[in-house]
Image (cartoon, rainbow, N blue to C red; front, side, top):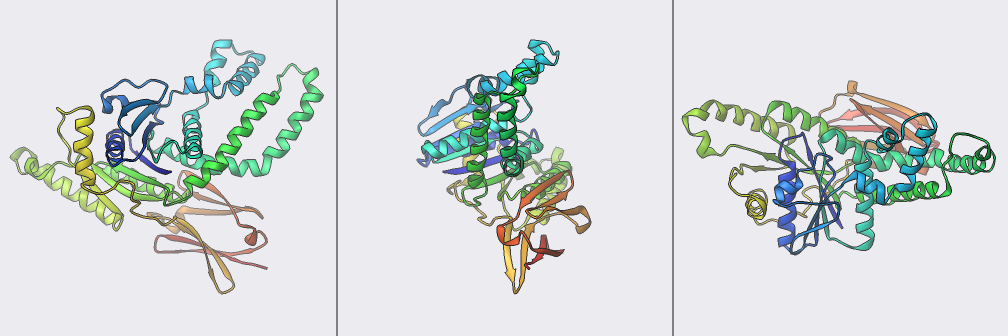
Length: 390
């Protein structure tokens, strides 16, 4: 199953780009699902139809739905929600407020990953196109499985044993409710889902991220940061879509002469920053079109006759290499200076890399658990961490 994720700054047009891509895929015969993880849904507007809490058939080979977190909590995570509500009420919080607080930020992302894992195991679709929230939320979505797995490996087994012991002892006298076996089973399901979906997200040929931006200076800078952070989390960014580009016939008119110069400067800035990445443009401006006609026209402008499932890059941003008796962890770090990176050895099994507002815990392979860190270098846009095995 192929997974294509669209993200970018709010308002750049990633929902329209996602919908256009999904429609083109369905026309090529792929069983396609278009899924929105943005709590401020606008997918139905692009499709010119109302989307409910269940998967909706759009056209041949084309399904779509918007994740409704309240519905998801009631139908899939009711055990966890009920426990959180019970716990908060026991601490003096009102019942209605507790129900609101029991919906944690990021639950849309967890539900999205749950669906990806489910559809992959059931062979329900050939391609999932994911329309995500603005960049910051998407980074949490894509880093969540690895972060969860890191904590699971260290703490979950001990936590589970302590809860079983507490239910047999404290549970009989404590006023604080303890998680039931059903709650722990739901947490087990989450744990297994994170581990399973990590395999999909880490495969650079199956999962690619496509960044959408406009030719504007502030948007370009945010897109550069997003590319850096996605590389940190080992997510393969294979394409850049520059949307809302004013076409030459409009720029040639007198009112837009200054805009033509500005747009040209911004397009040069984009190419200087991102070449040789695949860069596509879209000047689609037929606002009188809606629904399927709009998606068809936009897809044709972006992709022409090409197949959107083709991964324009198939290289993982993180890899291990060997040079004699030195092992190297190589991480792609575009737009980063050496002074911007902090590196810590958390323990024998993991490293923490801190860049800007993001940090990642990297679980080391068994062969490097007792290895000594020799140092780290920047060569080009790669961070190279060197180890020597004892």
